[in-house]
Length: 387
Ligand SMILES: Cc1cc2nc3c(=O)[nH]c(=O)nc-3n(C[C@H](O)[C@H](O)[C@H](O)COP(=O)(O)OP(=O)(O)OC[C@H]3O[C@@H](n4cnc5c(N)ncnc54)[C@H](O)[C@@H]3O)c2cc1C
Image 1 (cartoon, protein in one colour):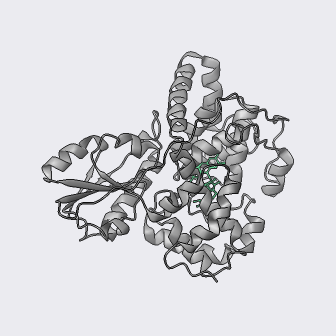
Image 2: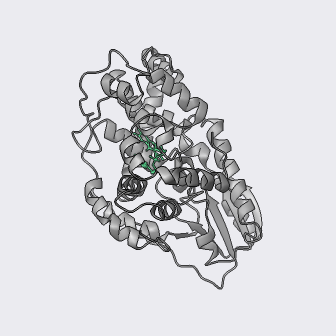
Image 3: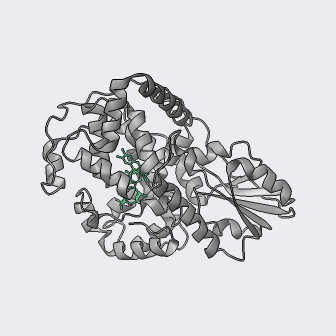
């Protein structure tokens, strides 16, 4: 379904743009993939950027007609900014996941229920199909993700962190912020007290009658959880010293380094893949292959501008720096998540895109407050011509 190249992303975007207006607003909740962009594996890794998507859509539709789609693009931005200000939520998720993985080693009943859910062997109509679809394709429609997570938490009573981990191991767009915070939302611990309940009629309606599961939970109680941590400061962008012998580190969080190559001429570039750090368990090969392919495509696209290129692990960055005789290493700021964890100790100038710098400060509260800033944020995107 997904070729890991920028050309494929651009072709998919061009195909979708005519449908990004009122069609999207009215039909996007149908599980049929004809009504959504299916761009998330590309946007998640910034093979194509949010700005490129917004420019293309708003060159064709008015902001009013494309309002819903534009808001969805900004949901990713919002989640990232929200988590940046509360990084302990990610650390707590990792800790609780380790605890839950320990429990499945010692509790045979829990282990069997978890395995049945991951293998699509629960006997629940729809749920089993989505589990298999996720494993086979690396993608699920947003509504299916909501139903799946709701059944996992509220009907099967499995720990939400194991569900979030199952998604992170298999989703091509697996992302710390969007995934963790969406699972928390379904469990009623993100928007405090509001859990999401999957209902058979709603599933039947939006799957054109393909599925009508029986025996689902009739109510969704919020999971127990401490209040949100206090907001911390947002990161600031680093300062590049133009006089130094410079290397570039490219991670899977930003595979469009053109904005950095406007500022530096690296003598060496290291592509550092951290996909295997998305989970303590094995990440699906479909995911690691997608990212590895996208890194090779990035190398091809920027050939001649990257200096000497290496593909290395996070543990090898210090040795690479010494071997290349670098005085300075520059990288796109990796947001809270596996790449940031893996590269935490690396001495590097971490650069933030203007898009994130402008948007993240608005992610203080709920999305409804954030979305008021969208017209202003659109006005700051270079080359975006609003119809
Ligand atoms: C339980 C659960 C887990 C999820 N896990 C992830 C994840 O790991 N990674 C991930 O990228 N998304 C995740 N999502 C969000 C969403 O489901 C996907 O981004 C969306 O389905 C992608 O499909 P699309 O590109 O066709 O979206 P479209 O509907 O075409 O939307 C366009 C773009 O907007 C962004 N977007 C749309 N909806 C959302 C959303 N709800 N949250 C954040 N961004 C959004 C994406 O970049 C997407 O490509 C999760 C949602 C739920 C309910």
